[in-house]
Image (cartoon, rainbow, N blue to C red):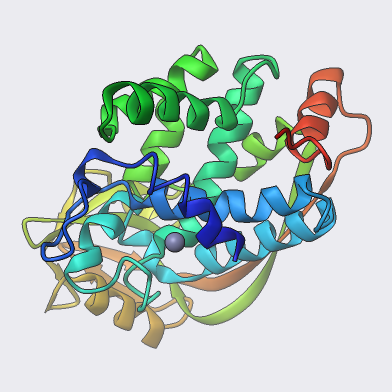
Length: 307
Ligand SMILES: [Zn+2]
């Protein structure tokens, strides 16, 4: 409910320029549905805390569960939030129907929203937040220019609120790079504890994207079998174990293997490791500094909504 109400603002008022004016007869391609949908998911939850309808703990539990869903589904190794958004009209993968090879820009966008908000609060020493970005977009584009905003204009609004470049968060949105959650939640004095549990299948450790129908490695996870075997970002993978490399082919292969098995990624032989599932627990750290305490308080303060 809160989500659909929030769309009255985020989408009906402020939206990526590609989405409007609305024409329901045509597809409108944008890579910013993580902003339109993802940030609406972000606000649907945080607004409940600010309105006193949900507790801080309930919010953090929801966030840690969506991080776990995202991290434990293989799709995050193959598709970024912006790619998922652009694909929304094609395969319907934008909502992450098949979490083995694609992601949901709803869940992922909500996490990106939290990281963007916390980063802006930290960089501005808690003087500004994502709320200022949203209000700024409303004033500048909806009321002022009477149009939507471009990717660059959205980023500019975020960076001007932060007073600093936000390359890392925007890179998380447009790549499959591993996310450093601990760093972002620490801005609000929160700790994120990660517990690993064994899971079926095998682990390789590459993040990719598909370029002109070809699988390209975008990053290699530290201490992974892929790194040990010498695979690198930028490597093109045409074949895995003699089969044409696609997200599905690679995912199926890894699902059918176990730790210690060898596979060939292009010409490189890799000894696979055990697959794990991760459980995340976000909690308040003992003895946060003044800035961290202030950020947490303002971020989730109940009763701060002004008419
Ligand atoms: Zn929605």
